[in-house]
Length: 521
DNA sequence: AAGTTGCGCGCG
DNA sequence: AAAGCGCGCGCAACTT
Image (cartoon, rainbow, N blue to C red):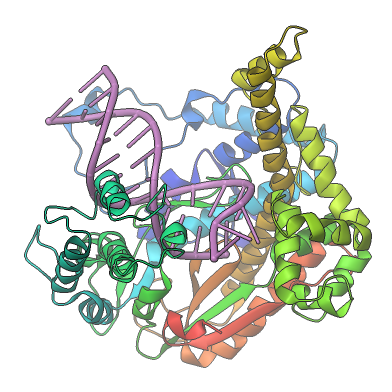
């Protein structure tokens, strides 16, 4: 059966889109490029990728016509023997590793992610162009002619110029804006929002409004719509397609390229609208990072605090801290390596209550400060510091080292420590999310398809969006309840897959909606 | 003219 | 309020 086949190929991103275009969807694969990257970092000896495993440019959605250049470019595709040899080498590396079982799971999850990434791009995120335009017009005024500011933005710019007595000011120029603000008597060193909000000058309100709307215009305005949303047809919404990049972040999180898919602001989420007769099932997992940490450290006390849903509230109930807000600040400080302000008081409290969990991240930080590498739960290894890092540390270690060199080295070591501290947690959370999504996909595929005439893949519930700890499934209305169950069961299943019988839960907030903004609590 | 850097801000 | 981690992107300013 097809379910038992695992396709081994060099690079999902360059092969699978063409299969999808031809109506073919596969159950499983082994992506040699992604797996090589993981194994090479995990391997003690240097292991460079063969040239045919380099990251391909994203496949165009509409294949370009062959050009003269194609005829002149030597065919870089590997022979079957090359592929088999690389695969054998990878399997051997897994077998020789400290924990083959976990590493195998990681490679399977990473490869499943590659399939999902290509499928999500193929299917696209349903996007209602008209609703988006309504939002833009309400905020900015009607669409202006090219190279002109929208009405509302122009009014605010005029107000700012007036209040700063600076008739020629371009508020988009950070340098001249800072100068104008300081001339007007504001004691600031940057034009950042957090600094402006502390000032009481009358220019602050219109300026912040200007910045917010200018951001909306440049990041998700009409130009963005034209470039990234392809029009719908026959009652179907348009689609936003980004290029997901599995493993694009060192920790194993995905990155995206194109359209700013990771930063779709709350204000335009109302434009993400299900097709008629369809729904969006939006699921986000609560406090994944501290839960992943509890699992890794086998910290029963922390796991217990997270049992009833809100882990931060659980910290309050357990009497560790007195407010939810403090619980969150303290926990994030432990995960990110924060030291300032409240963290100084909260961290000792957390260390007392959760010595195993805090001990694990403190240890990871120490390894990083000394130039070492750390691993996630499933075995993704952090990249080692570069030669420049060691050079700075070496200089500061000499007997006649100058004070500035020592300061620089200490600061650099602490930076590295914060990176490795967070790496183990962020990376393990990413592994949980991958397993969650892979299991969700597997179960969605097993659902009976509902008759629908929208073409291959479109009649089934399918994943349409993923953002670190949140997924969106687009589904025929009648299957929405079942999809919600699948998402919950898959979250549970992912927790067991990673942490076995250890009692750590991964609760979800699930909402079935017609547009993405309705999922906000 | 084209590439790089820094700022600022959106997201988790 | 940001802080402490991880990103992408647009703009202006600067470099080549």
